[in-house]
Length: 97
Ligand SMILES: [Zn+2]
Image (cartoon, rainbow, N blue to C red):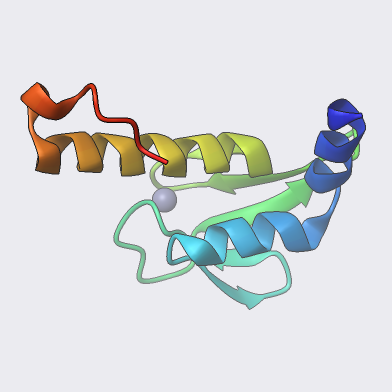
């Protein structure tokens, strides 16, 4: 089931770290992450495991927070809007694979 797979991913610490690293986050030590969502000089992001077992990211400075799927959605959304910007509004019918 998709739901189970999704839950497994959310509860896998390495998944959220991989997602954060993909957008430029740096796992400095332990659960401290150099935030990829703002110009972070001192690592102000952190990951923690919630009561439901899912790992979440939270940045103390810019306030970005969420589990691996929230971060993934944020990344794909900004990627799509960048593409739309580059292609111009007239080409919005073109499907992005
Ligand atoms: Zn931040």
